[in-house]
Each structure stands twice: as C-alpha cells, then as structure tokens.
Amino acid sequence: MSASLDESPDRHVLTLLDHRVTQFVVELGAVRLLTWTLHDALELRVGVAFHLRQADGVSRRIDPQEPEQLAPLLTLVGRRAESLEVEREGALLVAFSDGTMLSVAPHARHEAWRLQGAGGLEGLDYRCAAGGGAPWTG
Image (cartoon, rainbow, N blue to C red; front, top):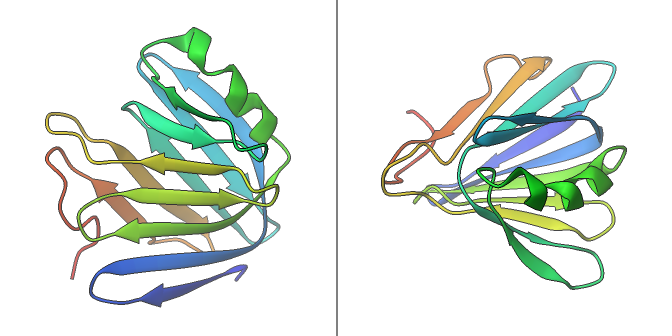
C-alpha cells in the first residue's frame, strides 16, 4: 500500500507515497481529482467552493459552480498529492508536492466533499455531509 493513516479523535491524516494526480474532471457543480499508483487510487470529489493556495503563495477561492474559475487546478495534473488531513468538524486539507494546498470547509446545505479509495485503499471512504461533522464512521 502506498499510504499510511494516522488516526486521532480530532483528525485523520493520510500520508501518501507517490500518488500522482492523473485526472482532473469537471462536472456540473463539482470537480474530481484522481490520484493513482500501481497499487492504489484515491478519488476526491468537491461540490462546494473551496480555497486553493498555490506554491507561489497566491490564494484564491474557487467555486465549482463557476467553471471558468477551475483553470488553476490544471496545474495539479501530474503533481504528487502528499497528504490529506480530515478534521472532525469536516474540514479537508490536501497538500501537494510543490507546496500547493487545497482546503475545503463544511457547507451548511450541501455535501462539501467525498474521498474514496480503490485497490490497496479499498474501503477508505470519508464524506463531509451537509452541516459538517465527523467524516468518518466508527
């Protein structure tokens, strides 16, 4: 497996080894990023506005409802996703190899994001439901 999970009551941190973003998909009102290795894959779907802080320090709010705002995400294709931090209240922070950070906060009325694993990460499933709360079960 190309990832390790560190769980605490307040957050789960998934450290990734050689997970490159191989797909960036634009949907109506959402975006998906897929990372892949020879043994596992992760899919992150974001359906609400989020923040992207690029390696040069420029931070911007990106809304999937406004497709013209999604262009900065194209720079992530081919980049390594290094870690994902999931907080108990539902916030998600994704760190990339070049220093880019993607952060998603819970939304009062919509599922903010969902993270699912495949291959060696089969069964990994986090979801930030409307209103927030712990994205994990158990």
